[in-house]
Image 1: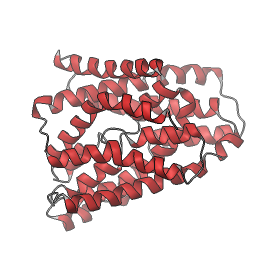
Image 2: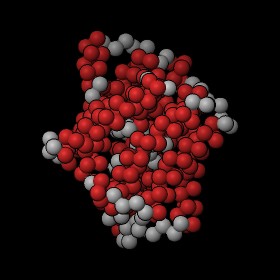
Image 3: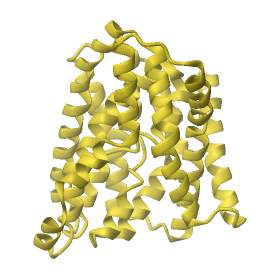
Length: 315
């Protein structure tokens, strides 16, 4: 348990370093965009490819897909909870869709992947990817639609949104790396030494660049600009208590390996998706609300994760 805490501390030290280097003006807001692109388009695809080809056999992986029903059902139930909560709490209409999206969809890659690696090691990566597939699909379809509806000129926003945009986001380079690795593994092909070595160097960039990017985002969003409101508190309750509880509850009815359920719980209780403030700005929703929610969710997560880690140890 202590080793897992120390591994998580290392992850957050990387985030603090990104924050500090931003303060020292080594990094700009543009740097976060560059790091994000490097992770999503270069290092993460290689990481997915190498891990699926190295850690799983054909029989082991086929058995995993039955577990995808848990993240799917849990996210739909969390979404329904958000609809009920925003009615009871009288969430303003210009942030209702953003509110529901932030409660339903989590940061499964930039924070989720490094945290799961720190806690469980590389054996957790396929489970991380299963949750990522469902999370990404819902975020870039239902989530982006809900954010768009926060705009008062909702009809114009609906017309401007093209389904191919969502499809491109769902089939990201990371997922394609995963799919290629899956085909490679199912065909029982060996990975050439050159690709293995080259890919390992790039894959090792995933965690530090991801956490640097989060640190930069937190700095440029501005801690002083964060404003706690009852609506943000609702997002935090939904993210850190309701979502993981629903996953745990479903796991009592659907039998899956213990590690899979633990990873799903960790993934469901991640901070707000870092794309939400950008999309809120794009669709003229409440950008300040989105940015503050993401900032608070990242900062509070540092104190929350030890309690969650202790809780899942009883599973």
